[in-house]
Length: 192
Image (cartoon, rainbow, N blue to C red; front, top):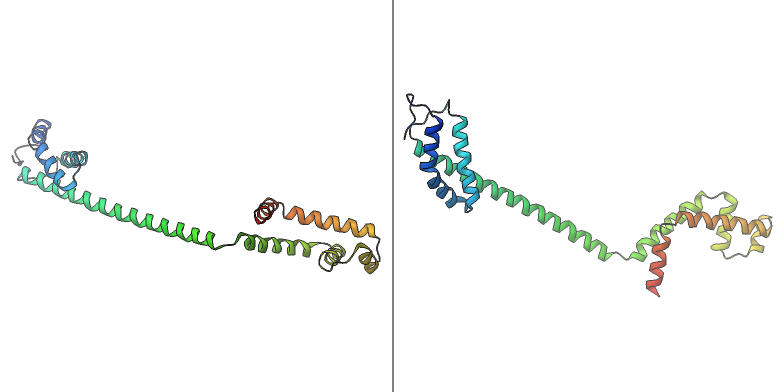
């Protein structure tokens, strides 16, 4: 069957082409793609492309043209599928590498050291933000081990004022560490 200038590609003739060559072309496509549904899709796409260009197409040997079109589409499908598969495998490999890295990082970390460093930094910042007298009282009591009386004598204040300032300092520290208190309790319970 040939399309020439005297013969138009009519609907009836197009349907005849499809019935005559459709199954043969599907077998050819199947030999490339090894999937029946994909082979049918490839043949249908080839016929749809011909129908879409029916007014401008000039084919001397329709059978040869159809075989070549199906072959080209089948090879294109395989190339695209292989490319997608390669991209997918690269993505999987990268995901595995990232997960391995995170797992190794988590396994190598000592949670006590990690949290204690963060907690110490939060405490340092919070202490640095305290009013001068409160900071001095807190430092004298907690780091130097001074008693309320010794602190009161050093700064010329009452022991009541020392108690008040210490309570305020501890309260502000507790507030800034509220997110870590559960973790600290858990770490302490695991340790003992």
